[in-house]
Amino acid sequence: MGHKLKDFKDKNETDLRRLLQESSEEIRDLRRRVAQQDLKNVRAIRLARVKVAQLKTLLGEMASKIKGN
Image (cartoon, one colour):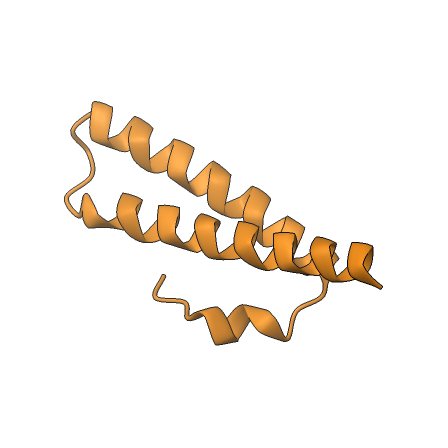
């Protein structure tokens, strides 16, 4: 769960998009588990949201580099 931004920088766009999809599904599952009072570590939601934000940032940077060239 504790991914660093540098862990994602060596991935290509396809891998980043796949990770983004998986992370979004993970957030959905975590929220469902909170609603059912099944999740003990609610901080996991925050960590997953940070991961999604990092992935979106990298994808945006890739898109801007492509447009800039």
